[in-house]
Amino acid sequence: MKYRSVFDIIGPVMVGPSSSHTAGAARIGLMAGKLFGRQPRVARITFYGSFADTYRGHGTDVAIVGGIMGFDTFDLRIPQALDIARERGIEVRFETSDALTDHPNTARVHLEDEDGTFEIVGISIGGGTIEITELNGFPLKLSGGGPALVVLHHDRFGAIAAVTGILAKHELNIGHMEVSRHEKGKQALMAIEIDEHLSKDVLAEIERLPQIERVAIFGE
Image: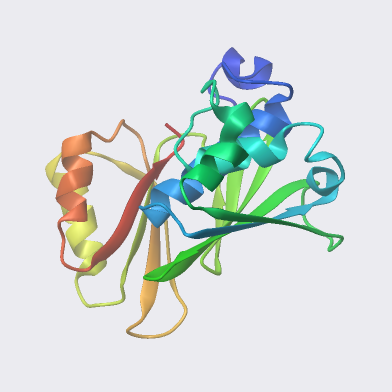
């Protein structure tokens, strides 16, 4: 794992007690909430390994729910996240699993409402740093070592070219790119690691493309 600064090792500014079990969990929730793009009606969270053993004592439960609602690691509302979710009409369900995973601090976040569902799998590797390993069934390996553009889109001719064309127009260099789909003509995924910061204007330009479903930035 590549760390960008000493703060990735020490840990982020955060509500405690644990950078891996609290801050990391909040960041997994944040990523899920960003990509879902709206308040869910139901949040079903499955913990594995160490997360499953200690999630209540280490605040993993409140952190991940706070992240889903958009609370960053330092947000003082995190300890009250379950109460706030209840007030907002979000039904939260926690489950644990003894299934073997690649990392002991693993969480699966399933969000849903009347318009659809979304699911993400993330691992917390320490210091508040996370990796996303699965998104809507698509395997991924996003480490947050640099900014990455995550795009869910319709599998149509020209979708990839349209996104990369916008990046080229703004002179944003692509370091690594993954594309995948479950079925021809259905939902597809682009994960594009870029060398520079992606501005809100560029992000909005990509979001306006007709093929795009959801866009989020990971690692910033």
